[in-house]
Amino acid sequence: MTHVLAAETVGNPTINISIFIAFVIVTMVVVIRANKKNASASEFFTAGGGFSGPQNGIAIAGDYLSAASFLGIAGAVAVYGYDGFLYSIGFLVAWLVALLLVAELLRNTGRFTMADVLSFRLHERPVRMAAAITTLVVSLFYLLAQMAGAGGLVALLLDIHDRTGQSIVIAVVGVLMIAYVLIGGMKGTTWVQIIKAVLLIIGAAVMTFLVLIKFGFNLSEIMGTAQDKIATSTDEAVAARDVLAPGARYGGSLTSQINFLSLGLALVLGTAGLPHVLMRFYTVPTAREARRSVVWAISLIGAFYLFTLVLGYGALTLVGPDRILGAAGKENAAAPLLALELGGTVLLGVISAVAFATILAVVAGLAITASASFAHDIYASVIKRGKASEHDQVRVSRQCIVVLGVLSIVLGILANGQNIAFLVALAFAVAASANLPTIVYSLYWKRFNTRGALWSMYGGLLSCVILIVFSPAVSGGPSAMIPGADFSWFPLSNPGIISIPLAFILGIVGTLTSPDHGDPGRNAEMEVRSLTGVGAEKAVAH
Image (cartoon, rainbow, N blue to C red):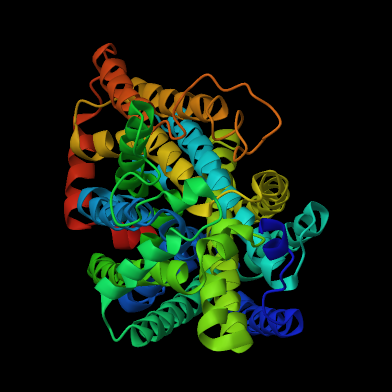
């Protein structure tokens, strides 16, 4: 059964590729037009702080609503039901935590990158180096997920089922990402995010409306029919799942339940440590516009995650579990297959182009964040000791984008076939372990010092990455990244429950064992700036 379904051509490959190409052409024109003012570091990294609150809010939603949100969560709900929807809840709550804890305070204190904040009252060079390294690693993990999504999506739509063909697709996405960022900088990337966010939310809303029409706007009927549908699966393990109750994926053994807690912790705390989301707040000119960004972003993100519940159960009901799991891309194919069922090849092509746009826009945002961190924090502040010109910073950033693009292509090929929401959850675990404790301590604890920051960042990063490498996510099972090998000794797929508390503890121990009590003047200045925004506008306009 699975082999027959895997050979199915989804939609019309010619129509699908035509819509893809049309989107790439339109967005590339936008990016080229945005390239007219990209000479300074401020223009290239943060668009000169020239976006309004609503514009930035839509772009933040575009950055946050990645391929994991659309393809991964819809697929997870379609295959696991209630447990899959927990990704939506986790991502939404995480966004609220990020806003309440750190977002505006970070924006008021920094200029280009997260390291600006962390090094404000600590020893600059070692802290900038650590912050830049964690930013690069988090960005790579996130890029991994987006590239894997690109491979699965385009493989499904262009009827490419061999690994070599899918690898070529991932390479093309990487090249397009490099082109977007090299040409457009943050300004071009932001406009792509805005276009993509509008298309994604409208597309998801239309599909949700069509699903609800089929069931007379009765959500209970959709979910009840979904439970009946899962029972018809030819796979006994899938047919036995209760998609209306907890436990389809994270029930059963104690290890599985602990893994669920670990996942939840990573999702809820991870956003507040994601550099590419936090960097968006530097693209607005004032603290007031930053707050307006928040209102727009929360409204759009909240609405979208409600759509994923209907889309997931709708895909399970109208497409069926066997067809989803048998398609190229597996779980990630649920939303495109639902589009095909609802509106034929044209809707499939449009929705798939939106998903493709989602991937391109997010990887472009990740690339510019990582490259800005390397150029501004490592090259300018550490290697050149603050003596690098803005022209040199932009040049080094462009070179870094090329290297990062190549790395993301290689890693994306390795991760091809994994559920994107699961891969993003790993990126969240790294962000929450390596970045969040130091951000929170820097903003809220006056005694916090350089040793505490370094122990927390490096300890959180290393523990998280090591546990991921030796977890079932990488080896030891058929769904692992390296299915033919088994070197896993850590039982949890997501290490957040270990690495996040460890990073917080290391920050406390490092601080208390150091005689450094910091500079009271800098501590007071940072507190005033973070709470009021005084000095932030001057820093952005510099």
